[in-house]
Image (cartoon, rainbow, N blue to C red; front, side, top):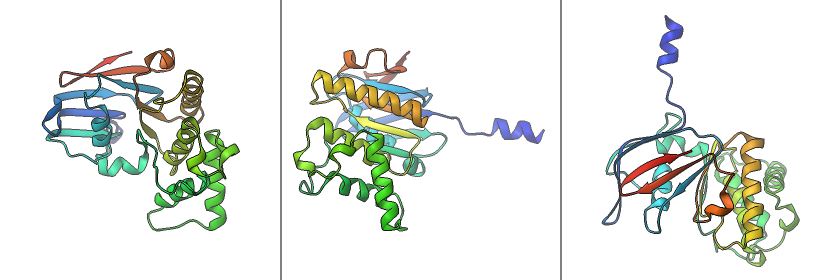
Length: 229
């Protein structure tokens, strides 16, 4: 009986939205929307410009309040789940452009330690590991401001992976990349899901580049969410 109780009381895995109403200013992004999505492989969050895809990603992180309902990631509220989620915004930071890429990743490594800094050597090793993981080692010591858009994206991914998250939220990771850059990024993202066993939720208008790579598509339209596998 005790075993059955443990099973039935386990939190629902994946991303769960229950009766969510979400506003972006005066625009209604979601109206009483409910959805459960397994967080495995790559999930594309699609929708027209201005539909509120970026707003929804930020709500998943607890950075934007809901008007009603709840969002749970593996049974955890956004505030509780944040330490398990890596986030890359649409625009990688323009701050400290003269600092080398590796310095930006070290700052991200420090940021997930909650006031318990790693030893200097450990920080360096972890930053180097993350940059190698995203294929950014070759330009790790070049100033961020001298990197191409694709190179900056790889640095941003390394930052998002600090803390070994279970889930990555990526806002337009293919934007401003040429076709070759998009293809390289899609291969990298697919490789990360397979090697690390993490889930990725991303927004993108580059559906052709993602064809065959995503596990499912979630369409955001008319205040609702619709899954297409």
